[in-house]
Length: 144
Image 1: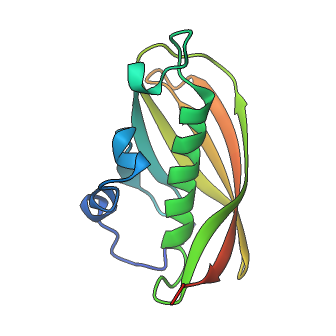
Image 2: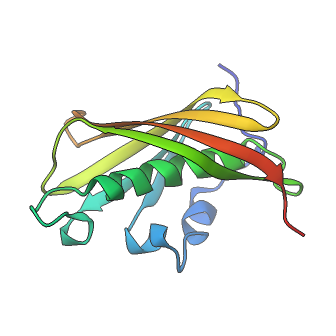
């Protein structure tokens, strides 16, 4: 598959720096890999991302999925004119996780002029599936 990214020279350090003072930074989400047609990010599973029962909160998984999917969507549009915003996020939580690191991988199902649909799978360190997500983005004009 050919590279899908509009911005040809994507820098992980720039992506991670753009998270300063956001929920992404608070949850310690880090972008780790850019492939020809995917983007990966990690998030530690700690008390910060737990629900009261001591396991990974579904909302934290959803935040990770929407973060990596939204940034991937943003990277395939001309960012001088367009941005991507979430329209719908569906998450199926497959396996619980108490500690460690989870990795989200976003791959496109559809990249259109006005909408995008992304598949985001979250795995643990042993490549066991933790969560499957589908994110629909609206591609809109850059606010003035």
